[in-house]
Length: 327
Image (cartoon, rainbow, N blue to C red; front, side):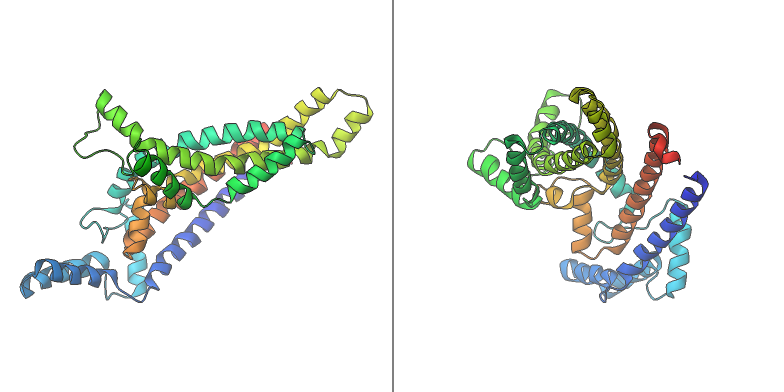
C-alpha cells in the first residue's frame, strides 16, 4: 500500500464529498431562512422595520440571493477558518458550538456500547463459528436473524412503553432531569444513569448480533481455507488450528471496529431522537426536520472528516499487524 497515494486519494475524495454536501441542501426548493422570518412574524408580530432588519441580517449571514459560486467559495473559506455557519433552527448558535455541545453525549453513549457489543459479538461469533453446523449454531442463526432485523426505533419505543410507562423504572427520555446540573455528585450520576440505561440497552441489543454474525462468517471462512485443510492433513490439533484461524479472522473484525468507531461521531439518529437524548443524532434529526441546511452540511462536514481520518489510521494500523497488507 502506498501511503502517499492513499492520503492524496482521501483528500480528493473529501473535497468531492464536501462539495456534494454543499450542493444537495441547496436543491431543496424551499428557503429555510424565509421560513425563519415567517415564524418570527407569526410568533412575535414584529414591526416591519424590525422584520426588515432581521431580513438583512439573515441575507448577509446565509448569502441568500448571492451566486452559487460565491456561496461555495465563502463556504470553503469559512470551513478552513473553523466557521461552519450559523444554525437556522437554533439561531444564533454556531454549528460548531452545537456539535461540540452534543458530541460528548454521543461519545459517552456510543463508545461504551460499541466496544461492549463488539466484544460480546466477537466472542459469541468466534465460538459459534467453531461449532458451525451444530444445534448451537442453528439456534444462533435464527436468533441473530430476528434481533438484527428489529428496527432500532421500534425497539426504543418498546423499551419506553415497558420500562418507562408501564413499570415506571426509568424516565422516557432526555439526558438529565430539569434542574440537575452536571457535576461529580451522586445526584447527577444517578440521574444521568437513569436516562442513560434505556438508550444503552437498546443499542446493545441492536448492535451485538451484527458483530457476532460477521465474526461467525470470518471464522467459518478461515476454517474452510486451504491452509487449515493442510494443517488437518498434517495431523495438527483442532485447538491449534482454531488459534491460527482466530488470529486471521480477528484482523478484519478489528478493521470494522475502527471504522465503526469513526462513525460514532454521527450519533444514532433514530435512538437518540426517540429517547430525546441530546446527542449529535438528535440535533441532526431536528435540522433535517426544519431544513436547517447550515446545520446539516456542517455536521456532515465534521463527521466525514472524522470518518476519513479514522479509516486512514485504521489502514496504517492494519499495515503494522497484518503483513499481507504490505504486499
